[in-house]
Structures are given as structure tokens and as C-alpha cells.
Amino acid sequence: MKNNNKGFTLVELIAIIGIIGVLLSAASFAVISQLNKGQKKTEQISAKNFITAVNDYNVISDVKINCTSPCQVSTVIPYVKKSLHGKYPKEGEITISPTTHKVARASLKIQKYIVKYDGSKYSITSSLEHLPNAS
Image (cartoon, rainbow, N blue to C red; front, side, top):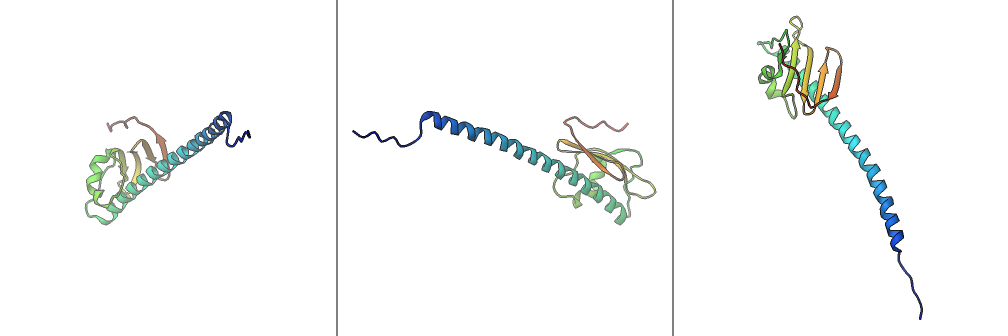
């Protein structure tokens, strides 16, 4: 009688499944990292678009948004809401220069990120905490 052994042994199959598992776990970490970077960049772009919308509104409108001391974003949103698309801050503070009528400072919470703007550059941090209220 001829013994015809075709196929893989159980040990070989377990080894292959183990190797595939290690490769998939390494790939999943890379994919998750890229997704987080993309979301962070999207939130920063959303904050820039919001600040641009406030600046544009103050340029083209007769009624200027006046927030010379920090005011809540909720007071600014009604002015610029029709020009916003997608995500925009639901919380945060914004300060507008009384001379230039442009955003001087902002601290905006979009999703789980806080985007800060100091008048020239943006910084973003991940936080699930609420921003402090203006005093």
C-alpha cells in the first residue's frame, strides 16, 4: 500500500497562522497610527477654516464680531455658521483684535482635540477635557 502524504501538518498550519497574526498586528498598529494622524490634521484644518470664516465675516460684514476679551465660540457661531461645512468647534474661546478685526487668539475644541491659535501659528493637543470658561 502506498502512503501518499499531501498537505500540511498541524504544526505547520499553526506556525503559518502565527506568522500571519504577527504580520496583521504590526500592520494594524501602522494603520491606526495613520488614521490618528489624519484625524488630527483634519481637526487642525477645521480650526483654520473656522478662524478664516470669522476673519472673512468681519471683512465683508457691516456688523463686526467683537470679542476683544475671550468670548465663547457659541456666541460667534451664529455669525459664521452658514459659511461653515463639516466639523467646527462646539466649545472654546476666541479673541478678536479691535484694530484689525481679525482673530488674535483662539482655543477651539473640535471632537477630541484642542486647537490653539496665537495669531500666527496653530498647535493641537489631544484632550477629552473641557476648555475652561471665560471669566
